Amino acid sequence: MEIYQVGGAVRDEILGLKVQDRDYVVVGASIDDMVEQGFKPVGNDFPVFLHPLTHEEYALARTERKLGRGYKGFIVQTSPDVTLEEDLRRRDLTINAMARSLDGRLIDPYGGIQDCQNRTLRHVSEAFIEDPVRILRVARFAARFKSSLGFTVAPETLTLMKQMSASGELDSLVPERVWQEMARGLMEETPSEFFRVLDNSDALFKIFPAIIEGWPHYQQRSLDFLDQLASLKSPLCQRYAGWLLALFAADHSKKPMIERIAQQLKCPKECQDLSLLAYTLSQEKLDLITHSAEHTLSLVEKADGLRRAQRYQEALRLVLLLQQHTVAEVASHPLYQAASLLKQVKLPTDNTLSVPQKIALLRALRIAALHQAFFY
Image (tube, rainbow, N blue to C red):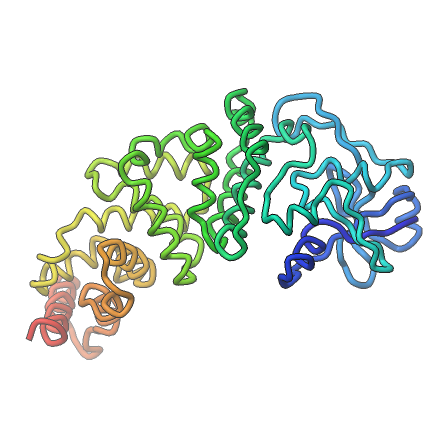
């Protein structure tokens, strides 16, 4: 039994980056061998085990053979006879196809070190085209490494990606897998590069067909805004909502489109709700509303900002940032502060008013609070 550290940990050490997770491949062992050593089986599609003490993942060396369409159309073979080089060959990029033995020896059969030095994302073998998820993964790694390290996609790899886009292989991608890779891409250092690589490989409209109307006109604005949100360390749903907002805010009829994109991706409801609210707020005449306490209250009520103040503020923040307000200007904007202020307004406890009277009084108190804070 031989154990090697593989994948991202080896790559990140070479690039001088902080290692997040360590994965291992085991050569010359069977499932029974691993169980006898105390490893806990956890893999469904292929043999993966958790170390009994560290709980790190150890996978048996394996090969894959393509039989059907899509990323699940593979036959996986694991046996003690599978070599380390065979296991590394099935990986997507050369920078992810390196290994390090427990005594520190580096194994690099496919030129990963040179591609790390040359800042190149290059496929390991022609088998790259067999898995459509790899297009998304290349785009994600470009988003991670383009800005800080200057990585680019190798021309021959981009050619293969275009072939995959033209072959219809992308049609087999399931929404959950697309969202998983997209979500990770959105959270990278330069998320715009995720979409640029997909666009350059002719995959963008195959994977996200609903954005085709907004892309030709507002591509650059959406990508610049996405990178701005990344620089502000915005969370996932804000980046997703901001990307769509920048694409569609200029059009008054795109709410159904945003709903359809969320349904196609099966993204979390939190992200869907935020994207719809941000778009809805973008269609309001915010400059006029800020001149009236009554209109301000009506907007907050319409956006459910009294009940869900944080979501309202997140959506409004996106709209104002897209309109080129600074972060400080957003924080001090009356419409932004209104939600927090209105939540503090309470009815007197000692009253005998009817329900309609209470509703009317509470509204009057809220308008008075807005007048005092912003319209004096």
